Amino acid sequence: NESLSINALPDLASCPVIPLGVRVSVSGPHTLVLTGLQDVPAGTQVWLEDRVLNTRQNLATAGTYAFRMDARYTGPRFFLQLLAPAAPLATTTAQLEARTALYPNPSQGKVQLELSGLKAQGSVKVDVVNTLGQVVLNATAPVRQGAVAETLDLRLLPTGIYSVRIHAQEGTVVKRLVKE
View 1 (cartoon, rainbow, N blue to C red):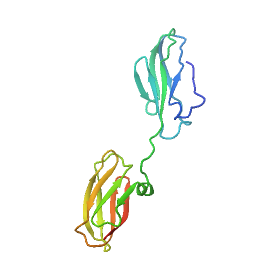
View 2 (view 1 turned 45 degrees about the vertical axis):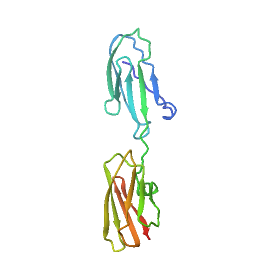
View 3 (view 1 turned 90 degrees about the horizontal axis):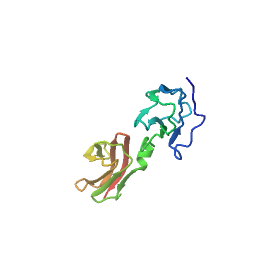
View 4 (view 1 turned 30 degrees about the vertical axis):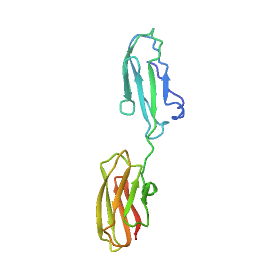
């Protein structure tokens, strides 16, 4: 019943898989027990891979792993896989705003709306609002592979200044548009 520990973790970008040299002195049942993840960056997934049984277990949700091992076995069997958290694509209004384009502006009728960095979702809602605060056009734009590319037809709207409100799961962006 020996306790094992790992002193330090490598940079996740340079070494996401760490081989564990596990040897037992007695053949039979054994258990690996995770005692803490305090040195792992928040959101990192830590998986234990058993390449003899071809199984993987998330150590954050199940911190013990029972297995049988022969004392004579010396091959590579266990590996830790560290999966860094995905970088947020658009988590604040400022980030979402930076990923939104509305052109040409000023426009004489048709404008292109482009928005990237969205989570997978069905669609975003688009409202065109006049200077009186009235919604003069509603549209729904499909999200494909985390992006929107939609043409808005404003030819029937009078000349003026409009706000284009784009409502996505990540937040709402408002762009100013001049219709000539």
